[in-house]
Image 1 (cartoon, one colour):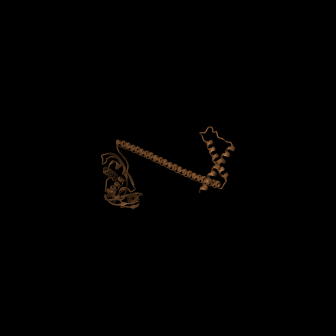
Image 2 (image 1 turned 45 degrees about the vertical axis):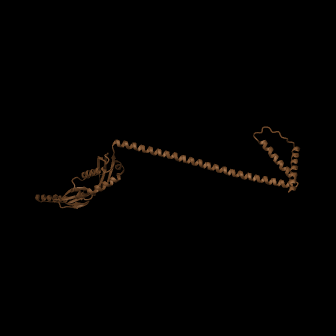
Image 3 (image 1 turned 90 degrees about the vertical axis):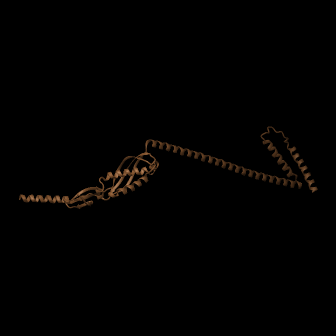
Length: 309
């Protein structure tokens, strides 16, 4: 009985160990390599996997998720001999666990070293101004080079980013002075343009004002001329009517015409700003007799003219 129980215990232990070494569960995002007698045999993918116990062994446990590597800061000399401090990050993903495990000894360290080397090569071919302004172009170039270099390791480089490019302190001070000078230059140009536009607008306004004033004077002169023309026409018509009335023997029209002119003359003398005191004969009978005498003289003159004609 003791031998039976011992045999049973050994058998159960053997079965347990067999299942333990034969059944492998790989978590999501990982791949495991299987080695048979120290040589790569196959890869295990996420889920339940079976291997030959005691013959096949788990070699490397590889994380196939996208990972990020920090590229440490390093001094780099540009094409124009300016020293800059550069660091960055590299995003990569393992596509072939076997190559990542057996084609390179330390994958992450290899990626870091080859990234630092290619950063120095890429920036060394550019001037300082190009290095600072063409960061996207540098990132794209590094992505292509690193992806091709790490392809034999079963790795895909998904993104390369330069985090910081720090020029020397004296270069930073010079750039700050240059930026200040450029801003002052733009401000002076804008101020000059503003003054220029102000003067142009002012001149245009004065020009338009003079044009409008001239047009106003022209319109006023035209209206005055029309008024004088109409007044002259009215005077001529009145004179013609009075003349026709005198020829017809009607002296009253001439008396009215002369009296009207006399009253207008007296009114003008009274409204003159230079006249302080005016002495004139204002007797009504004398005025009437004067007007009558002038009318008789005008009648006789017109009669003589009519006889001669």
